[in-house]
Image (cartoon, rainbow, N blue to C red; front, side):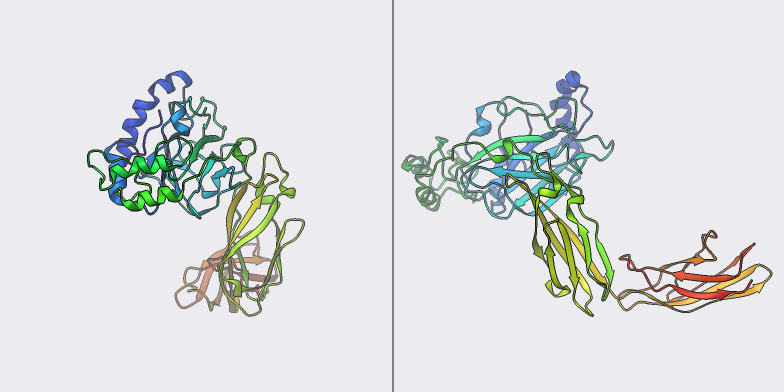
Length: 443
């Protein structure tokens, strides 16, 4: 069965062998697989998390049981706001590779993501704690930028059957999304799929019990504080009447959009409007990328723009403010016809362009020539900038490195050089090009 997230690479390898031996025998498994799904609360006390670990109920959170209907037993905590997924090996994974959908809430948004390559564990934090809902998480194995092995580039093998599968995910094929069901019903400490006075009565005799005490029950500690208090009982009573919604999560029959991310945008100050097509960066199994709905959900530096908009064609239009420099991170959301979402970000950098002055060339003797000039940049230290040469110098593949004083110089033998214009150009670390400096060569 899926094991709880280990705390070290050594323990991962040990548990992989124990859990994957028979699976590898059956399927010759070579693709990365999902080894554990844990839920957690960012407010859960360290004593509560330690109790879960010492009780082998999960590492860093609560490992959802698998292999029977207990996978769908309601989770009773009121502040679940994290999903932690551990893999069988080191993987390439991004925040956008996971979608979580429900019945009461079509798509869940995330506020944070991180991946620990030592434990092979990815963690997503929700924008808000999960209220009562039936949920399905979906890890991408067939989209634009699927979860894949760091070492082999093999894509995720996510094949899974809820309440039946007991080993790591996979059927030996790879390319199948990992879809995993679970239910959250805060206050349902007795697992009846409804919250009532009976739940409060279950918790009341345990008031005063702390993690590690005999009789302590993690389900009654509904805020994950490490101790069952009268506050837990009051919270349970406030949830009385709660039941799970009917129906299935949207993601059971519909894949969320996927994205490979969007490259950074770097432009010089006072650049004209910048436009590019968002559908080129997204895909969806059921909805054409042109028919996805695109929106800007965050902008960290509004002063960098006079306006931002996405037109009906899905084109993102960036209208930069005059004489302004700086950075902005734009969060872009794509929503499919069923309401599922994927988010990605674009970093926009606006800076003064580097400037090359005093560029000239001189024939030293014979076919030996020196090319020199000065680079300045109001935004960055120019030391280490690389100057490339063109014009009649195309084909010679000449470059020069700018020194700490801003000066570059190169002396080379140029056999067969023709009369004409030599050019020099550089760019800053953000990719903003300088002016094209020129000098006339008389060979």
